[in-house]
Length: 361
Image (cartoon, rainbow, N blue to C red; front, side):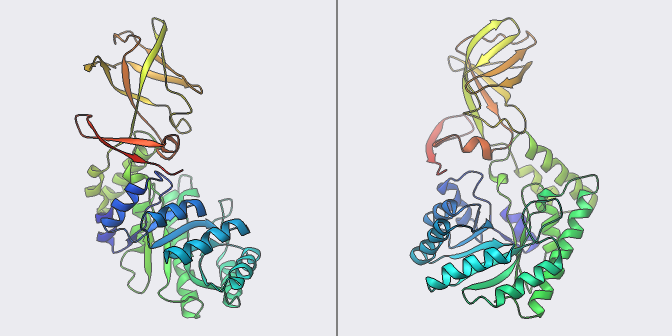
């Protein structure tokens, strides 16, 4: 992904919420990441402690307790911190707090879509909010932030391109009116549409264009496998660089668990549940099986339901699975598997664990 960003001359600020693993943050920064993206003040603290000197909180900073966390973070870690704003009420709250602390807070106006998530709903709202920020001495407008992942439908790609062009026009207008301090920032991109966003923001020499995908570092065999397949399809149509990138994305996360019961010939119960693995965007997929260290077939196994501590798996009878066998499962939506584990084992291609990394959810 860093190579992809470099090719398009955009910066990469990977979203840390996926793994919340400081060791991974450090690797991303060492390999050229501009900064780390987060969703909450607590996550921003972890990113700063991992060494990030630039942090985008792609969310609104609301509440005095949360503001205090950021005030301390800016003071102690000397980071460039950016958060989103989309209302004059929040702007006034932030200004009052940080003015009292004699700090200047850098903000990005979030530009959204009707029916979507947060964000100003029109360029006019963006302009009016920028003018409000100009009158607040403790805030400094750095640019515009978007999240295109809330746009769906049959014409999603074209709608996203139109949305991004509107955001670009807005940031250009704000910059020409002198409402932005420093090099204007334009930032967007989750893990599904990063290719389209990077293409639209490529080679903007007068602006600091930043993409923020996070799941690419882990990937999966579910929703992001599907999303990456669509990235490759678009690349083939557009003769894009993403086609070369696609081979580098592999599902890197597995959860291993024991077969604890075979109560019926075609039914297995696995000691793996909602407290262990994501289930919101597809059930775990059996990839490999082991008995006493030897590989066994898991052909014909399909997860059908997940409870708190159990996964139900149907078998067509071709796999000779016994109680005590261990099955390695791949997942869909890695963010919601990582957050269930305090430590993650790092293994080589032969499944030998070399070390463990700590998560900080």
